Image (cartoon, each protein chain N blue to C red):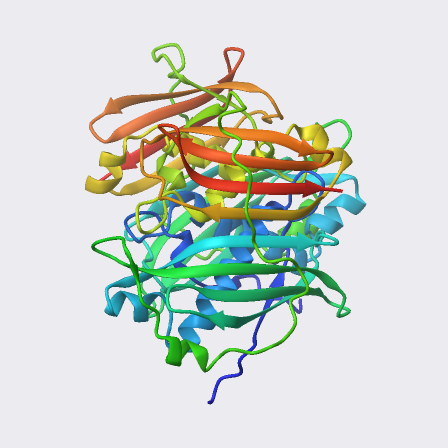
Length: 243
Length: 243
């Protein structure tokens, strides 16, 4: 094997991508993770173009991000990514974010499926091919789990899917789900606290013009469950823990 | 002078940043331009940190982008940036976007002011210091000009400024103005046409929770004037030409 199992990527945080506190945001971390995941996969023959040739596409199914601290202005971030499990329908990819001195900012776990581009149905993964890259590097955070249903207990805020929300497949971009969900928290939460864990489960694809309702409910102190629904059915659930 | 006057930056377009047509968007180009502008300025002693030390900050005043073609998936983009004019209150920075074979995708022109971070009022620029980097490299597009007022002729769509809209100064991010404006066009416009010129004039800072109204009016075939208003006053005007 000519490629290392663990991919290493370098970023410098940029002033125009910080939030109002001068820190990078969960959606921005999501973008870094997607960049690293797609580059790491492409370098090993499982990238966007390789999947397209087989009329398939990667779909992010679940993502959990746990941060103990956040990169600030002009900080260098090293992002490691590796595959820790491959099944018939899902594969699991881990991430570690590290600062310039080698201190860990946080970890992330993601679960991916491959769909047929025509039918949009799941397809079987190349278990042997992908399996060759599995490594047991530790990712000491809880796996994505079950998220409580909250759409029936909360009023919900409406949102219509717009041009800028769409990804290359013409569906609601996975980073935009995160943005719209976090926008449900009042600015005072971001002033006073930090997100220690963000978890999201993508259940269906959002489409242009779709009328969504966005729900948020406090389940315990500093612990929230969220949902994005269309016609009463959740297309996404999320859970946010603040500290 | 140990630094070249013309800065050169390299990007590879990424699948998760494409729009539904598999092309990069005007806001994404805006991000590339901001990255190049801030890095080029920082390398020459006029970056975010240098300005902060003097209790000042760069403010983007006007931006015009003209594209003859758009980068597609996984294309390499070379972005050149240089300063072409420095005045007491404004400086002008140009950009050229070039593909892997040296063919020009398009050009951009931007006008910047510096404000005092406390008073938010314009401050005098270091004309001699900045002037040392002026070069006469050609930027063959029209300078940003006057944009027709349209807010009184159109109903406007409402939008409230959210957490994800805020930049590091706590104000509506300059790229988000672009996103919200372009979202006023129906998806069919993006399917059938391309934006050949996008121009924006930033007039006031959008703040968290601000209730905005977004306006769009066709002035001539394929030529639109737009405005973002708060309490009847434009905080931004824009003009979009389609081809």
